[in-house]
Length: 271
Image (cartoon, rainbow, N blue to C red; front, side, top):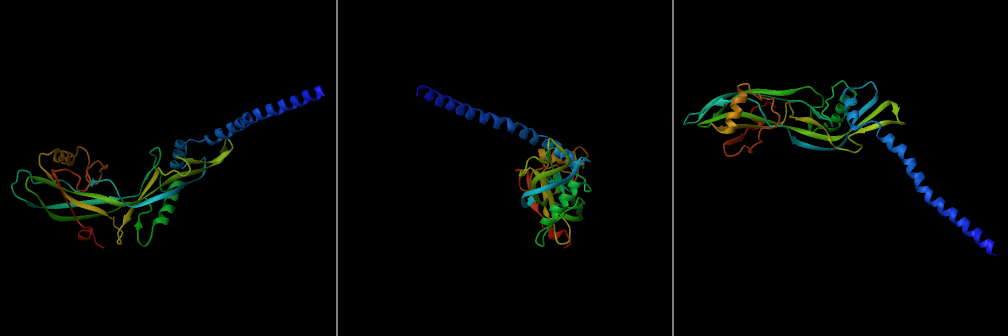
């Protein structure tokens, strides 16, 4: 009877050892899966898609969310007109030129050409958001407008026109399918599946096909820091009309030395 009891205890110990080993085997099996998931980094996916790499079978932009009527960078779109030292307002002529194009922001700052696999994907996504209510510029062609008009420059001020285009911001991620598997995996994402940090800005258009947005006349007090900056850039040292990088203050955000007056597009753009 005593020996039978000891055999029962021995079997019980074996079972306990088996239970301890099981999680170790599970962890070991997970290691190869983790290695597969990291075969192509987000940066490599962005680079290969942007350069239309021969390693790719396909690359597409997958939209996750969108925002209409997003305002783009604030750009100066006319030369600076000077009325400094004067004690009265002056009527001046302004030549204004503004243009927009589709812009793309990838994870690593890469851009994609229109004839690449990725460029075609952006066009197709643009078609999805082009409706009878909202017309957008889907390809990478530049559209714009030019006009001349007279406006009032205040006493002891400089003046110029500012522009911010209205656009649809579609955000999402890149899905790349490689021709050859890397560690057993062919599909990779940038920055990750379901991410929304890749942005495509589609300019919104008026019925006549010209850009929609906000246009305003900006008067700036002479000898103010803002006036000196605008005058220096107008002379060729820095930002030129239409090439703003978004560092200019927005509409009615210039401070006490700046007066902004919005100009309806209906006054300057033909329908």
